[in-house]
Image (cartoon, rainbow, N blue to C red; front, side):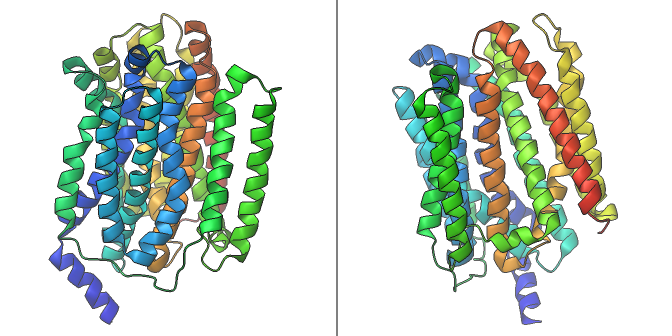
Length: 460
């Protein structure tokens, strides 16, 4: 009873809109920097004379750091308190964004992108943990809060290329990073009024697990990015793949024995948890990889200027806004299963629609898949996130959300690495990459859809 009263007291002090709005700022800037960079790649390439590999690193340095550190950040959120970690993440992200704006070569930009990933890793699990604990005793409010939070992130992903195009039209690519600084400052000031969440004081910090996870993931993605330039027979490539596999095996052994693992393996005893995490992996890998390829397609194949290419992504923004809000209503009435099934079906159709993209395809023919893909994702992702949180106690919400978002960000980096590798070779290679990536994306989502039918029960 006391816990319930405390939870409701937190909501009285910090109304629904304020809590959701403040935490959503973090999701907005972190997701914005996933997609806003894509539209700037040709301009960054011209500025630094960067090749495709360096461009992939500029995109993936952020998502790798994001994914590598988020597991630890989830545990630290439960250990130290979500509010403190949330504020720390905003501060680091703002400083790193300024550094990206002042970058003087590809290496310096990649380095500051890594620091951005550190800040994002701290912000995301802590912001979701704040939501989960604020509305722990009101499932309907929690579903609504998560839907709005997810909607903000989804819209920012879709709006990234549009905002990037506009900023570069009036300035240059550096402005896409400077715009984050005032947003982070506003977030820090607003977060002062948030109430600190409950702490899980018995937790420690799993340094060996964090280190081996970092090595495993970084080596794997590095091998994929450099595969085209070095070739699979190069000892660096197969050596990195073998090293990654060994590190991952060691990581799992460490996690089984650790007192406070960054990846509690008992979470995966739940089939629902496993399927929903796998859903997040597939959705992020396909979407991030596809947006990377489409950004190059619009500018290097269809020869759109940056502003026009950015505006071409406008249907994605509209699709996310509509479907994220609709997802909350569907969850309130039908639970998580129905919006996930509908959303995955729509997204699979959207990816299949991209198969029409060729060297001279008019934009109006691409409009349908451009709006259908985010419509489906916007329905499925909020329900997926709510479903994940419902499988754990509120004191483990930071860890659970970190597992989900870690795997999603790692998958996003993999998607960019794999799909991006297919674009080497000029316009023809880019068109071929769209065809192959669309087939892979549609097939992957259909497989997840079958698993959802099998394991996710109808419940509210």
